[in-house]
Image 1: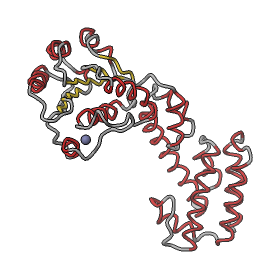
Image 2 (image 1 turned 60 degrees about the horizontal axis):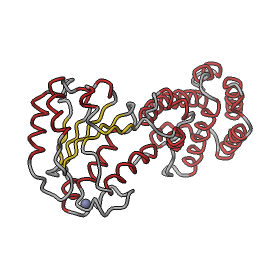
Image 3 (image 1 turned 90 degrees about the vertical axis):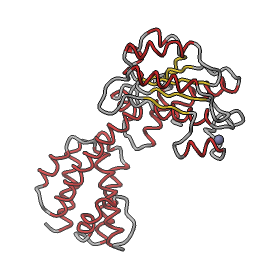
Image 4 (image 1 turned 45 degrees about the vertical axis):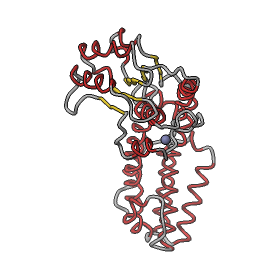
Length: 324
Ligand SMILES: [Zn+2]
């Protein structure tokens, strides 16, 4: 359960325990709000035979026969519907099948749940065919619709569902979570992703991977004398200075470990062979000095320093230590 979903979850579980869970839910929120995982967890809770006696935070008992069938993906009281691969709409025939399926008595003591993902893709006819079921569901039925674009659903569908907006949450919860995932400026990342924390993480991951590659290229070239200092600095000049320092410290620590023991576990294991080569460029004592210098720069208020100025100093010092 993602922290920003906790309030919505508890609201629904409360209603479930009071015996008045709505029978049609419209789970919406921006791309990356975690709608699919939220819906799946709710589905898992409702299909567990012990759903009444679980604590509010528990998702399922995991041991009842229904949970075991859920785990292997063969729970008979669950139906999932989304657009077929290669198609960009959900057609009336598929919805009618789902409605027919809902008429069959559930096999377990939990709910019978139909999950309709990306409900904005319902054709007009498909949406209309849902109306009667949304209006008079059986007492053990739950229909869950998910969408990033609720406005694209007909009002007649929306008005028959209880709205669960996963985009409406305390922003500090998502920012803190993103920080824990290693995102530097979580507030802007969240803003750029229109409030979808998972989308923010994916975008920043991509961004960070590119930055890491650029930085390693510069670091590698400086240590092996493959490019001038000016060129190496230029390649990463746009990156925040603390990000550069953090990565350089990480690779320095890895080089020290590898120099002492080539089989030592290192942080950036994906770059092990390149780091093994770099580790031989300086002796252990000098590597420690490099690390201390980087750490010193990191600990003083380096965020206000200009990246090119700081890196020119670091790179020149390393070249000096190598004796180039
Ligand atoms: Zn169970």
